[in-house]
Length: 180
Image (cartoon, rainbow, N blue to C red; front, top):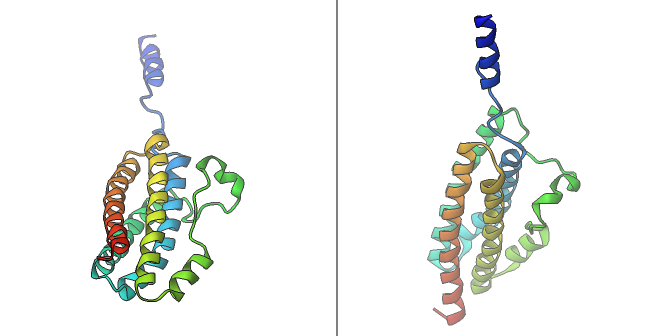
């Protein structure tokens, strides 16, 4: 009787049961959306790191490109560990609760490609500002609703980093409008 009671207590306490999942659908969606945003951002950062007339834009976009490469490796690894796909389900209904965040379109990239001189720098900075803002919003969704502690920590770190990058871009944007 005593051993049966001990077994019941252990079951109720969760001992001997399978460990609960450490991640949830928000964690998965955050990583998938972040990978998509990294790919989109690279379509701006890569050419800007080469073509921008302002050295500060070239330096920042090269930093973004390197940072995104590190983050995407980490994100792909986490999704692989969970046996989850790298790409989000393309069904728009799946994303209904995630807001209507702007994604870079082919026309945006065409505008960047066609821009020359100072217009190129302004276009790249403006696109990256909007883009990084969206990344922060997705990271905040993870911080609020994710379960995996490592992924939540990544989201929090990304938020802090992106906010600093946004500050730097705003400084560049202000300098461009002031003629500096």
